[in-house]
Amino acid sequence: MSASSQFDMLGDLARNARDQACQLLAGERMSERQVATQLEALTRYRLEYAERLQIAMRDGIDPASMHNYQQFLASLDAALQRARDALDSQQRRVQQSQQHWQQEQKRLSAYDTLSTRRNTERQKHEARREQRDSDEMAAGRLFRQRPEYDS
Image (tube, rainbow, N blue to C red; front, side, top):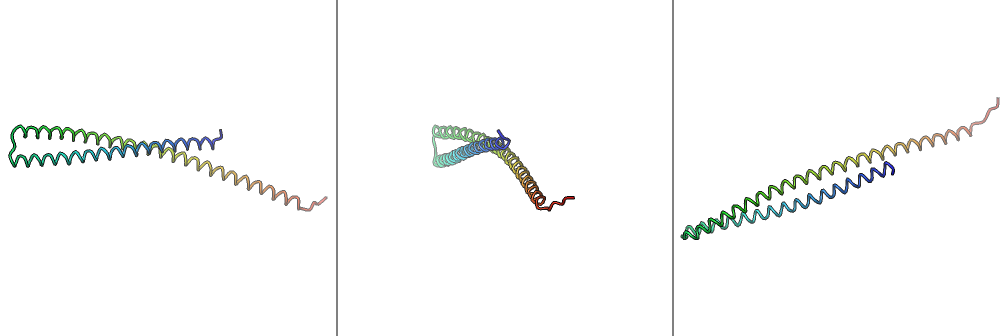
């Protein structure tokens, strides 16, 4: 296998790894949005329920109903904390996926740079060879065109 095809293969592998990292990052970001949306909905519901408790307390509420409201608010608070923890965890996964994608992008860029350098060197070498061949042909023509002098 030639060095050029090895670079191409490494570049393709790096490109595939980068693309997979990109897909993973997109999935993690989508999950983050879903968790954030759930947290927002739960927060709104908790506020609405607390407002209902305030209205009930203003209008008069029996102790059993008050206890039920408080218990439910406590369970909503616990659910909110779990949702915040889940969002924090998901944000860390997004950050890790972002870093992984960046590493894969750097690796791909390095292979692309090496490949570009290699191609540039190959083109320079080819141009020098063509110039040398052209010079040799011109010198040969010039030599053949010179009249020969016999001494």
